[in-house]
Image (cartoon, rainbow, N blue to C red; front, top):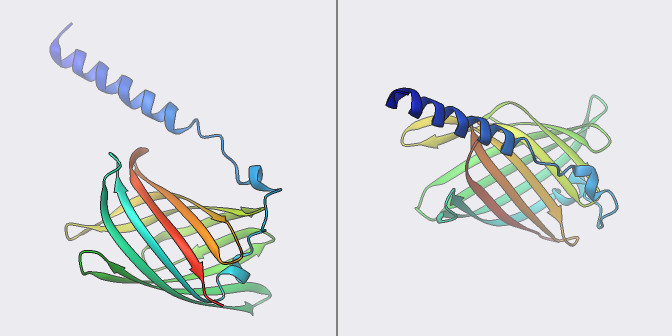
Length: 186
């Protein structure tokens, strides 16, 4: 067997294994149905919220720290509970970013979200104290925007504290994680 064909076969096997491993995730948001306190986005993200986060690369190294100040409001629009989440990010490297989400509760515990740097529509489902978002984000890297898929999990710990863990991937390959701690102001 030629060296080129052997390398091709090895690469193919690695890609197939990565595909099957990435599709083995069995956690469902319904697994948290009995957990309390119950997470209602329009209640938690209403008013001022602060978040503190880190981005870790695929090796687990912290490559960026950040804070987020959020102001959120909700109102009925055409019979749909609709929220605006205005996020202001401040990163450890001195850069800043703004993201404004529009979130619609399209049915009980089912959400759709849009923002300028989200490709298409984010789909969210809540159950018990948990919410799972799935979306594609345009991530600025070295002057270019690349599309990165997010599998984003939020867990309400108390009425004031929520933890967030989001895995990032591209073409099914794990890139790293974003970890956040939200604190709601009263």
